[in-house]
Image 1 (cartoon, one colour):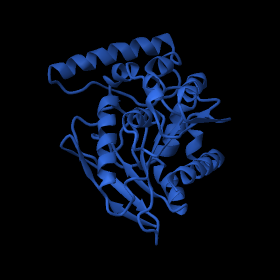
Image 2: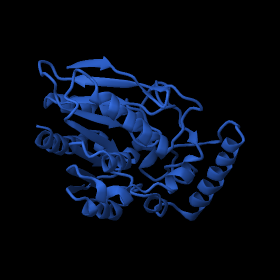
Image 3: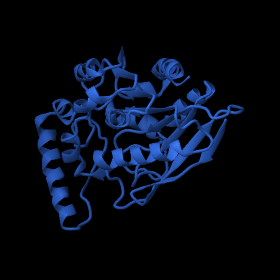
Image 4: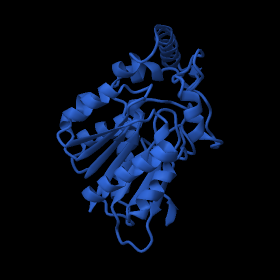
Length: 293
């Protein structure tokens, strides 16, 4: 396996990218991958990429603007509209790479980016396959998983940060993760240990995001786009996911013209490590091989 640096520009800002290539394969198909809410590509995405490379597929991993080694300020800005722009820029970049077959592209997203890959595939009918792992379905679906106190705080801090942005002031930041009883974007029983299990000591990451993300995410609804997705799409959900309601994921999968749903007995973070990682990556590899060959 070879790993090549392959940065690209999104709206004039450099995004950090890595291209994973199988040895001895000319113009392999490629899986484009990026992470979920406030996460970086080094949060266990290489583990998935390496397995895809073992099956003679290339993988392209990137970080959104303002995250990881990508440029952009203010830092740690979670914004679905900007993320989708970064996805579209990454797709355009990969299509022009000489090392891969730009006509055989799959999109892979998890959690928040599971919604982004649906949004992108709905607009780009040249995408050959989509994997949406534990996908963000809609702002409403995720909001109803929260308690009223958290919803009120998210709303207050979100509006406050939007107002600061409108006046050109520095962002108000909120924690990405916390233990139950403390305020954060994710504060369920599984959130802190699960997120930290994949984040580890990754350089450059901080447990914070601009609070305007609460408002922007609440208005984001990838499920509205599913009817426009032409590519075969594998949707994988966790029965015990405390952040993404499995019934909403089922509804999304049922509306996909070429959707396949797999529900496993896991929570939101278990698919990144251990037994459930093995189960998820095996199913995804088989699906991608079938549709990218």
